[in-house]
Amino acid sequence: MASERTYIMVKPDGVERGLVGEVISRFEKRGFKLLGLKAVQPTRQHLEQHYGDLKDKPFFPKLVDYMLSGPVVGMVWAGLSVVKTGRVMLGATNPLASAPGTIRGDYAIDVGKNICHGSDSVDSAEKEIALWFPEGVCNYTRSLDKLIYE
Ligand code: UDP
Ligand code: MG
Image (tube, rainbow, N blue to C red; front, top):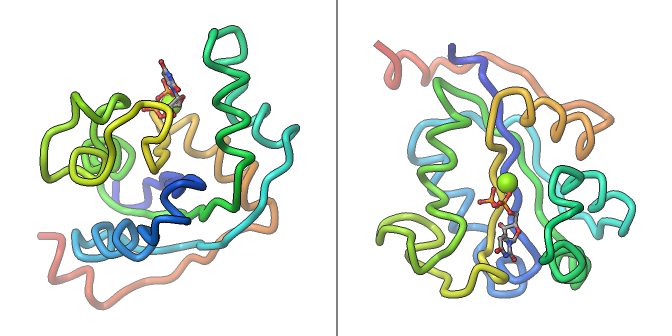
């Protein structure tokens, strides 16, 4: 369904390295529709909620510190199968296992500095959108869609 939505976030390393535009550009050019975009310096509590499923993992404290190290840029993209396709576009969690042509495969090396986040299911996408965009996001129709969808 073209109304499927995902939450994509450029992490602090990606923001500082000037990769925000690159991430936006890849989703834009692919044909996905931008519904929300903002830079934010998240709090520890906010990040602990975002990564709540990982709280028992040994890397969790380091992950939260990494995510607190600077602003992040969060975005909401919509389109057919955007959750799964977004993950494919980001690449594997460990950048060394990411194929060239993916964002992590082109721009990252270490798992603890892997530039970007993407929701892993439709359900978690909607939860993450509600967490990061409590004010809501845009919705609009695009005439362009007739050139992208058959
Ligand atoms: N992470 C890490 N070490 C690990 C696994 C994950 O530092 O061994 C970090 C990494 O930044 C990853 C984030 O924790 O992106 C969330 O992990 P998850 O398994 O959800 O991977 P993702 O969904 O981001 O691919
Ligand atoms: Mg994840």
